[in-house]
Length: 289
Image (cartoon, rainbow, N blue to C red):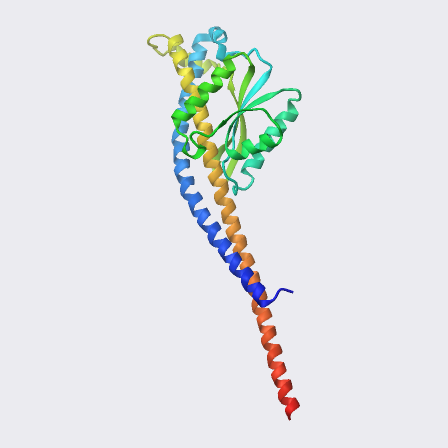
């Protein structure tokens, strides 16, 4: 059994860990609010531009198939943008995302993929397994990424797709739904999916377009792709800090519980020693008599 000194040191260590996890929980909560505001405010724009692409695609009809971004690439490989975290201590955030990636690989045997990676954890995971990493995106770091950096990434993926090496481009990221729910998600970035519907087509038919639908469509599609990438990065960051906040709160609560248990053991052990000392004193006094 541990001595009183050992118990005292363990209680002190658990208390220090609790202070650290509490501080990390507070930092994660602050950053979560900041990124959550950005992610939520970007959704209406992302939804509107996606709807606009759908309406214009409905207006153009079969002419959309002639555009290279709307048909499968000539290559046999797949380009994957993987958005993970740079740091750990965020629960199952990375493991759930990478598990989904492995499920995709098992469901597509024989399909070779090249990776564009945000986040050091994803990079280390792929590197240990010898997966072909086309580019590790570190400038700027994920936490400081802005729309300009997301636009560069989108243009890089478009250029890779148009090179004829890849059949499609996929994005693996974590979609943020609430502060307690964040879902690993796979979306197809390229070729762009055609969302044709009679209601959208009717709405587009009643709209006056200047200069014309084809010109607007060709200019809006790159903005749509940039927005999809930027929104994926924002939602991944928000999910990461939501997961880290929950993990640090659980660690803080666990440290508190362990500390209470150790204090009870310490007090019981201390009382036993005091009782033994009293018995020794009484026994010595009786022997003197």
